[in-house]
Amino acid sequence: MASAVPGWLRGLWKRLSIETGDGQRDTETQVFYLQTSTCFGDLRIPIDRPGLTQASFSSLALADALALSRQQGFAGITQFEQGCCQWMRYIDYQPPQPVRDIGLLYWDNDILIEEGIDQIYREEWQKVDDGNGDYTALVLTEALTDDPSSHSATNWQASLVIAGDYFVYTQNRSFSLPSNGSLTDCLLQATAPEKQQDYLACEISFGRCRSGRVPWEIQRSTIPWREGSALWSASDLTIDLENQRVLQATHQNDSDEVERKMQQEIREWQIWEWGTGQVFVF
Image (cartoon, rainbow, N blue to C red; front, side, top):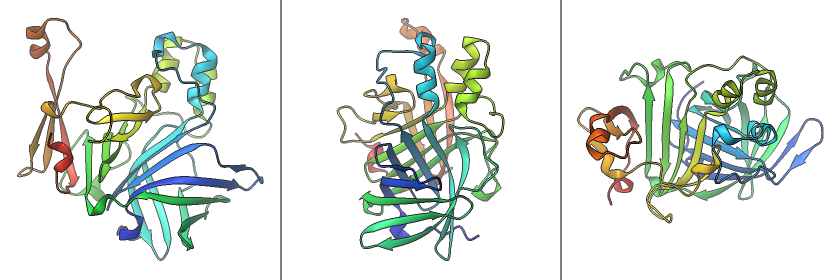
C-alpha cells in the first residue's frame, strides 16, 4: 500500500459516531484524531471515565483503574491507496490485535465516512482544523535512522504530531502488552498493584500548543491528572534542523536546583516532518 496521505485527510478530526457489527451506536466517546503527511495520533476517552484530576497511579482504586483501562488510543504511520487507509499502530494503549486497522474512506457531504475492511464498523468524522498546511511529526526511537519506513513497531518510545495549533503526544510503556484480549483483562490478571500501574503507564495526550491556558497545555489525556498541565517547557527544547532532530532536556524532580541540573537527561527526537516551527517559538 502506498504511503502518501492526501491533503484533505491531514489535520485534526473529531468522531461524530461509530456503528459496529453488533448494531451498537456510540456518539458519546470523545475521539480526537490528528493526521500529518505521514504520522498520526488518536485518543479515545469514554464519556463515563472518572475525572481523577488529583489522583496518581499509586492512589487508584481498582474500579478507577478498570475505568482507565477502557480508554483507547494509538500512534504510528498512515498508508493510503485508492480510497483505503491503513493506520499502522506503532504505539497502542490496548493490547495488539490480529486484524489490521484499515478502512475505506469516502465523503457524505462534508462528513467523512470510514467503513471497516477487516472489521465491521462505520464511523463518521468531522474536520476540526486543517492545520493551515503546518504539520510536524517527531518520533523518539531506540535506534534512529534516516528512513522512516525502516522503523518497526517495537522501537517507538514516543511520538508527537502537530497540525496547526493542535498536538497529540504519545509515550509508550517500557514493555510490550500480551497480544489479543484487552487492557482490562491484563489488569484483572495482574496480582500486584505495581503491575497494574505499569499496564496503565501509556500516555496519549491531546492539547493546544499556544492557545491553551498555558503553553503546550494538555487538555485530554489517558492520564487524567496530566490534564491542564504543560506537556513540556519550550525552554527545554533545542531545535537542530541541520541534523533533523529536537533535543529535549528532562529533569528529575528535585528541590535542589543544582542537583536538578546535574540529573538532567537529554531525549533526542527525530524530525520526520517539519512545518513552520512557529509553535516552538514563545
